[in-house]
Length: 533
Figure 1: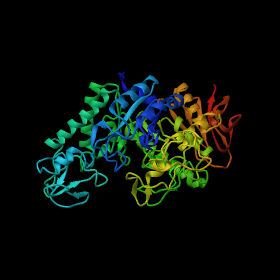
Figure 2: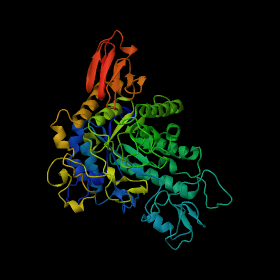
Figure 3: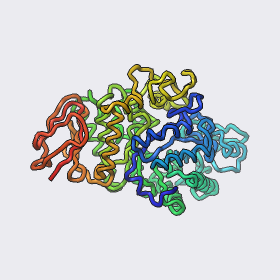
Figure 4: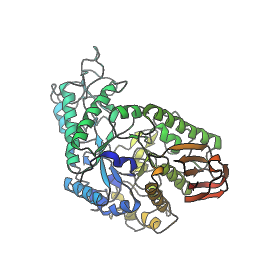
């Protein structure tokens, strides 16, 4: 089953699965595709519309699968290509699409392409220099010289050319040289292969890193426009979502024929909302700044953080228009979870009320729907340590399904064979316990997903008007849905002109009561309020 157009994305709720840690069906301690199939009913019950998988392809896993050796084969630890095809079909049967992660800019050093390039000076699938330099790594083969890496040394950059040539660097090739053309053709082959097997599209890792020295991203944009046009002609319902790049993605995304942009946790929009630096400092941060969704933040600091977010949002809208889709996640595989001390409990419900009603496309990182804790002491695993400032392992720990003795239902393997250690706290949240608790975070997230579906004005198409930008934060969706959020512990009162002469009723939330044209908002109170004429 294939979509005939990409309009489904605008109303979607995405769920990110880190496959190593979601569910282990064969007892080896590592999550797999069969484990995901076994838990698709949870995702259907929750109401999500699409799964985004982190890379599932053949890999030596020096960077958790972001170092690929075969783009057309599922890694054996996850299962087989047939398992992926079955998963796609079973998900579709439940109304859920599958998005794969496409590592477009580099491969593993173990990829056959690189093995051949390291032996043959005439092979230009990768970028080779005759001298050392920033980002260049000594050749491991018979070929003399140095290859350019994208991230870790084990991830050689594929050659998509340079936007600008330089007489002192003769290895620079234009984007239409044979090597770059071959790599473009390979991207089309990979995309077509998996779309033919039923996937709904791709999140593209480091999408704007392809053409080097491309200051205005014109050449990279042209590359993705070419691939996007081909893809939509062959598969009109498929989507491409780029990993954003330091705020440039919005503009480049529009010109590059991507279907939406990302505000990832490593970027300032998301950081202003959720990152207080408790368990790590982002590479672009000299020091952590206060974030808005923190119960203990000083009111002035939190209001300033919200101001940063709104300013960035307005700037982005000015660049690409209010109707440009943006994916805003609860968290992701590259930084801390939403449940990062001291933020926990009711504060998570406030954050999810925002994520589901702001008008972006929500992406739920697996386990965030139950408030799984970030574990900052988790051991470095498969390249999780980005730099001395933080290690990503703490957000990648096993999913907590139930209170069984066998590793919270994740795996029957001995605890010392698990991909990463479990949260051992006695009060750790589980899916099973929260399914049985009508007041749980999981039930709240499910109600939000349902309300968003029943009230399209809360989605990406409804207008948005900010009516209070502090504590509380309040905004009107359309002309009759008011969202009120108070992440701090102190109660507040809010008088709003928009409520004058109108009756109001709380559709969903906690700790918010209506008193005429005023709202009484308790500490960590939040609500979606319907305003009647």
